[in-house]
Length: 253
Image 1 (cartoon, rainbow, N blue to C red):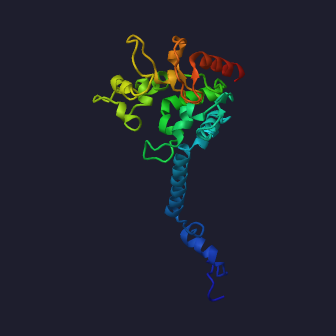
Image 2 (cartoon, helix red, strand yellow; image 1 turned 135 degrees about the vertical axis):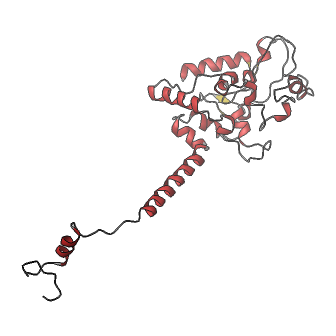
Image 3 (cartoon, rainbow, N blue to C red; image 1 turned 60 degrees about the horizontal axis):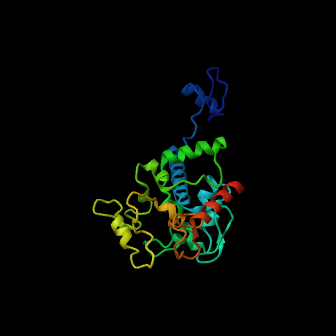
């Protein structure tokens, strides 16, 4: 009993009780390494953030988060230069007539593959607006078709900047950084029919009036000049056929 602590009356007491009596409280607990815990949590958060950032650039992100039915992603992932389907599921005789498919693998940029966000650059306000419509159920698939001016309105830029910018079709830009219609016209001047020749100065067309991303592109000129023999690129359709396919797509969508 000589090694045990004793109470004032001489009776032995436990070591724990002795420590309690000396300190006025329970025995101190072993301290946890809080910096280590915080460090582990920080690493997990950073890794998750990096993973989300990498994923958000992949087509699978678009099909999972917003385009739930993967209408656009399946369309975009089709093989190039073969018969395929547009965003409505309608037949296209050559998938290259859809700009999304045509531009996916290209040697025009340093990237081996052009993904969704290379063209559809994320805009926080636009994404928030789409998110609200998605939650409320006001998010039709396929989306109501917009021209490039509408698609770039959130960025405060002209519609042609969707195609002609510092990363894509830069050769069409003037010294002021805007699309040069003279350069655009000259880019196809060697063809028997130059689709970019400005026959009507008062007529202003959006690139997407002819070039369609997820359905067959069209030569708008055929809407008025039906009597002219206009050779359509493989897979492209006339203006009248384009309108028919568009209305049919909406009806079946």
